[in-house]
Amino acid sequence: MNKSWIPAVSFVMAMGATTAFTRGAHAETQQQYVQTWDSTWATYEAEEAIPLAERGVDVQSQSISIVINAPVEDVFGIYSNVFNAVGINPDLDSVVRIRQTFTGGYPTLDFIALESIPLPGGTILQEQTVAQYRFNDLEHYYDADSYDVPGIITHQHVTFTAIDCTHTQVTENLTFEAPPIYIAETAEGGVYAHELVQAGFKAAIESGALHLTLADILLEAGL
Image: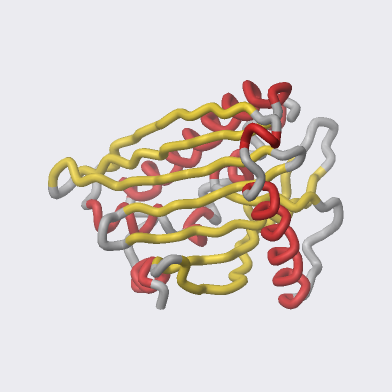
């Protein structure tokens, strides 16, 4: 990864997503998006099934936290809804819902984020980011995974803890798996990207630009 791209790809790295690289405009049908998600996720699962030692990857973990001045129920509902990221990240054009299911009893959202990422020289890179979120709305956390070529995987466990009735600590526990040549830059860029998104949600929630809606509640409940 070119470090000069790190601010531009903050959503790709921060939303816990599997990335399918494309170079064309966002012009697929819903059926094509579903096929893209399924094939990309199958690739991710196949790699995850191989033990780390056999994959020849290094692992780095880091946790980052931020305190948001709002009740935990509100922060969890807003922050966990990926559709709320539209407008927070300038590169994110829209989010395509693929399906909602249950994984191990937990509500699960499969989606594709459509992005237009400016690159050096004025080129715009059209990206499709394939992702899955799994929610636990009773204990206020969600899990997400990501896959990127060449064999870069990110796992997230994001927790929401009530400090008091008007303050919530959001902690993202991040684990990066990558070939040794990429691990340092992957971890550095990933942490930076996640910090940008955290700051964006904090500003939007505290300013009232984002507030808890019925759509947030239903999404995390799997309804």
